[in-house]
Image (cartoon, rainbow, N blue to C red; front, side, top):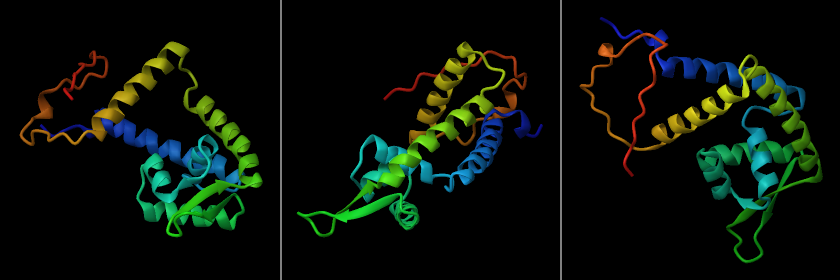
Length: 170
């Protein structure tokens, strides 16, 4: 029997992620940003003056991606690069006043997106979902070799089955 990917949690997560990115893109477009740029602004709002490497690490992207995002945000007047006084090879990225002001619009867009995405879920379900997604994120961040011979076809397809908790050593 073939794997029914449409009933898999990872397929639903992937579809949710696509829908979230599309909806987020619409909200961000209204304030002049592309998806991902808002994260740069939020990270800098939390800790201004980060290096490009620090930004890449905080955002979970490759340095060339950060360079592209910072260049665009700089062109828009939301961030500025400042070469270090002590090390000419090191540049720090700072929010401009316009960038700081835009963070409030990003927060509004995120709150709107949160309301839309969580419609119909009560606080208990939201908290549980947040916890479960953190666990999925941790699981996927681990570099664990999985058994290629593991047969997922024998696992129940019923969405109402209780989830099994797997505790990972580490």
